Image (tube, rainbow, N blue to C red):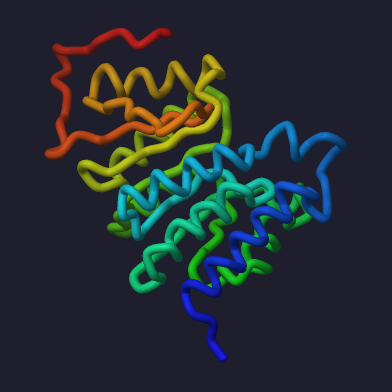
Length: 221
């Protein structure tokens, strides 16, 4: 018997709580889960942002142990799975013993999610070329400045005008500096979260704007 969206949402919610409470079955290194995973309370905020956004198609950069992916899946199921799609880009699942993807599949989200095992800087432009359009994106991949900048450049092409780009770890200077360019030069607007969080959400302009080469604003932080 095929589970209903609500039954599946509750299964995903249970998987989220189990992962947050007990951790993954396999660790890349001692303390790795606590160090790199998005905390459960921030995952709640991410879920709520996407529900409020009525996001049906989401692209995620970075899977790791799957905490944020489960929160995104929960958000999509809360609105019904019809037309929902979650594309996850992560070339390093083998280093994590496939723990993140197994958490996603084990929660029943295998039919809703697609894993692209490729560097985001290569996968995102291909999605652009294929005409892929997302309502929102979540970014928690490479923290090397030029990688973050390239990710955001192509996500600006992929996410629809007026859509949402949510980032983790904006306290990292490399991440903060990359997103600052788009905030100052392309009209991205910081969105206020419902409560304190380490996540930062940015609204893309609608209609989309293209800056003039004469209007460049330096973007250091």
